[in-house]
Length: 220
Length: 209
Image 1 (cartoon, rainbow over the protein chains, first blue to last red):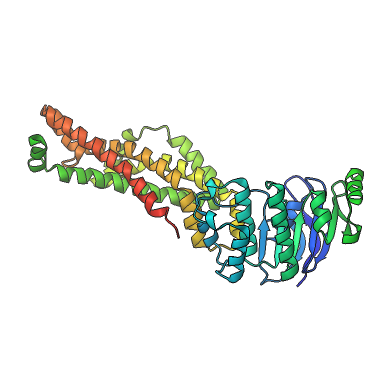
Image 2: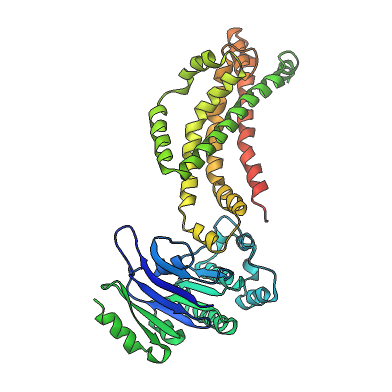
């Protein structure tokens, strides 16, 4: 089922952010949300995940759909072990997929460690594992790979794209990284901070460094 | 050694230790229960929290010991009045320490992840709130041991015929100095043992699911 957003206007304490945004996200595609800092991109993702409620408009999604969220920051409870962090989530079952994912990410040796003892890269790996282990229909990613080195980042990026294509999931990804956008996007949603609105969608064949950098330079 | 035996046989020291321990523990548990009730109310309604903080600010400077005669008048000369003195003495400090930790946990961005992945309420309560509050619980408990025991002993030193406070006062009046020193030593041992309890609790709670 498509994820539908109808006439969405986001607010924060001081001002309106994105105004009157409507869009339909289809399964099996990678959507990048692109625009300046402070226009409400993260809040848009949080609204879809029911973490933020200060908006008008409608967000329509499959009620049975599983949503996972990859945050910028480490989101493991530091006083619990990795295993305990994962055991909190009933949606993670001991399936073949979970085992494959564990092997692919090589995290078996981290399971008994306390989250507070993990490095930044290890934490991101576990966050990533948790996000995919629930076999989500919608994946919301808010600059999730910032603390990783190039090799780790490429591995995880390839894995998530493969998941989206094979499982027909929807990935909505906030990023400022032109290489990432250029490489993985099916669609890029461009927002204007000055006009506080959604400007246009760039399809895969329209996305290139020149278009994206022109868009950044011309945006007031 | 003879002195210790004498304390055990002639003065029934064990009964007095248990009496002090009972007053301290009852006061402490009541202070935690009341603190948790106030914390839950404060987290639910921010105006209630503001009111509680205002009251704490107003009443905190009053030395608790001076309230003891008032408690005796209100509740009678009994263990309830003594327990209440411990409760009143520990309530505000325990409330403040635990409330700041629970409030920090409530507004922590980590909570978002619990909501996204639909973690059950009971699991959130135990693994997030209770385990997350363990350090604060430990430090509030350690504070409470020293101050709570002092209050329990003070409460037992007047209008009482049992407890370590009563015994210390009795030895002082009779100038039984060796017994006095030994009883004070026992109070220190009791405090030391009470200080070890959080380690046991931590060990029990911090085990894998």
